[in-house]
Length: 372
Image (cartoon, rainbow, N blue to C red):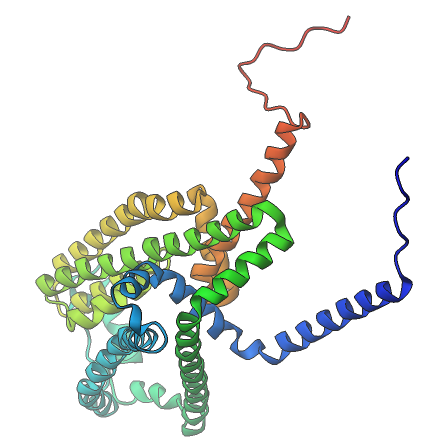
């Protein structure tokens, strides 16, 4: 005869319940306190996952630098990788500041000169008259003075606060990345244990899928975007677009967002149209759209879809939905979240198929026999 189970001590049960309530309360309070810095922590985790293969090789080659040298070196390289293009843009903007000031003074004194392209468009006379009445004279150009000093000051304050906030988040991301790389082995072991306790045997597969999704997204978005920017920088240089290197860098950044590079193609084409190079403007935009079509329909589905095991439609939903909800961070979080959701969905119905709860039916299968 089986022995009866020992009754649970009411005192021990109350202690476990109190511990659970306290843990949930402290976890919620901790998330509330760190809400401002959660994006920085997520960015640090994404960067750590992205560079993990290279960092592992570096650890195997220089095992003595695991505690300080290698994490500091990797963090410094990431900082330079982000700050170098930003510094390039600031330098180029500073070089062109005097040109902008001279143009602004000329507009205030003489109005906006009529573009040469208007003379070759349909309804050229009507458009020329409209331009002279609205932009072509100093009196008409007075509408540019609508930007009041107070408005400019207000916008400058908003921009300044945004830059300060992003600088703080970026600095904290670098600090978090350093400690993440330094204590990587311990953190990975703790996460594996937690996943096994919460999700059971499938916890390891879920974590592995998250890592693959982040890496695949980075390969498909960042690397392909950089390749698009490099190709278009060469096209800009050949076509005579002003500042081809800077515009190519901006194109690479915009190309990380689906259909974002087309905006930069339009800017480059507009600059060429303003310079009178209509043929090159059309060629630049056409070449750019061909490059985007090849990248979005050939390389990105292979790189992202193979890693996330998602149809490209769900990849696109994850990317665009993530960008709309979380901004730039959503580029990488969105596809990873969609991949994990689809993995759980497939596991759930796979269990149903195995247990006989769900039977896949093909339209080519013969109909079931009539019960009559």
